[in-house]
Image (cartoon, rainbow, N blue to C red):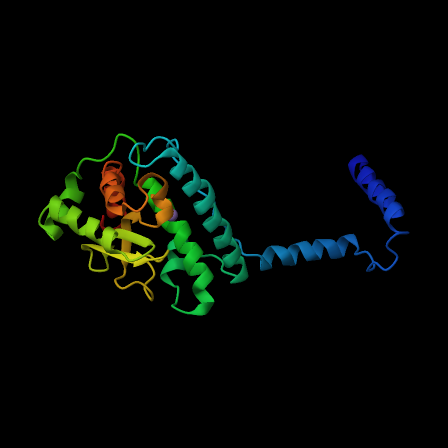
Length: 254
Ligand code: MN
């Protein structure tokens, strides 16, 4: 017996001697072999899919004054962290395995069974995209292929921006505005309620891959803007990283 095993065993025995008289109705102790077996079956039953809260690539105060530090801290550290935790629980409960985030969301159905995965998986994905397309010293206008695609679809950047801002302003209650690549490879603007998104084929009005998203839940702006959603929407355009949006587009249509 190795020294460490010996110490561990004697430790357990000593603890057992203390506990045993107090707990005489305990189930018989499992043998080491049985414990190993249990471990193995746990490993195959528990979903191997688990998602982590992504780290912000900038400080909480980096987007100020457009988005204030306190909002960023609560939004990332409480809201997004909450979705992440609940999404992982929902995946475990639904025994989802071997699927990418996109595959999970694309396959969701509009039924009670998928509600937890839909709300929390959407919340996880949407915020992850949101943080990644914002940054300090950003804003301005798109360039290159993205600018061409926007001009091709919306005639001009101004028309696109107006359509996107309208989608964000008119989304009733909580939700998101999106710029997406459709299944036809063309750009489109849309909005979705709650934590839905256009990846959810069986759920969203129009299916596509989001390349830019704006959170218009009140938690995203209320501390700084109160009920002035339009001001927040305009401010968002000062922190958009068009290089990231372009990158997202390239991933879909090359
Ligand atoms: Mn949010």
